[in-house]
Image (cartoon, rainbow, N blue to C red; front, side, top):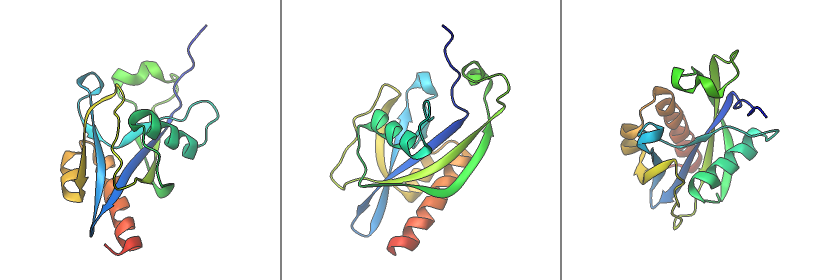
Length: 154
């Protein structure tokens, strides 16, 4: 039986926690096998999952965290499928659409990493931005940070 192709839609979840007068973001470092770069939680919906359900599942699978609140923000982008991953998608898929979410995590919660990651860091905005490899991930974090600072007045 043939394995179904991976869904061409992805989610990016930025976990955050409030610390005094600041916000910290959970940055995850992928293992060398998965690129060795830093990012938030990422993945694709499975089957008929909604984006929100996919984001919640990916968050739990990659960190074992249950958010106090999880919501989609008004930020998304597309990027080309890299050659090394083309095998996972239908031949007609040339780009992936990624939708961004914020997940508020309890102040005293810590992740339990999946096999995809080998390290994590709770980082303030500037540090988190310096860790991120992909420009789209940086733009998404900047959008989320501005949204949170307007919302909570940090």
